[in-house]
Image (cartoon, rainbow, N blue to C red; front, side, top):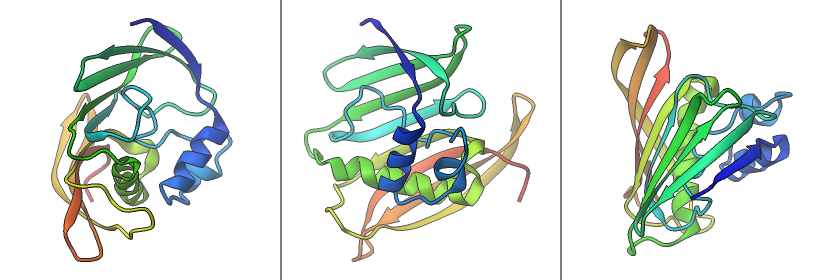
Length: 187
């Protein structure tokens, strides 16, 4: 697959954040908004992904950043790596699909769970965000989010916390789970 040059656009980040029901100033009001955890897709298709893993090798990119995306895809999974102008790896997004869940609402549920996590621990602090959807969330359906810190540690000289997250439908059934790492001092 070929390299794709891209510039992260302010308005695209703001529209994505609004769709994820975020009013976080880091996404919506900043001059150079930070990208939400699930903004950089593994392959550009958001609708049929049941499992995703987004990694940032430092603070997430911001609007105006110029990146080169390199996609490697197979029938059921894909990996896109994002490099900065100097060739440094800044992020990667992996996704796997299953035929059981094929609704764009699956990706929206993950994005809403990411909003919950970044509102709690800071949009600029995300380092990894992995999701697993068990079913699609219907359009307009309310997602109730919960999470807790599972560990604190030091990695690459940076204090971090890992959290587990869940998103449940109106009946209380968990429809999406996430595991995330944030740069963050001990709470």
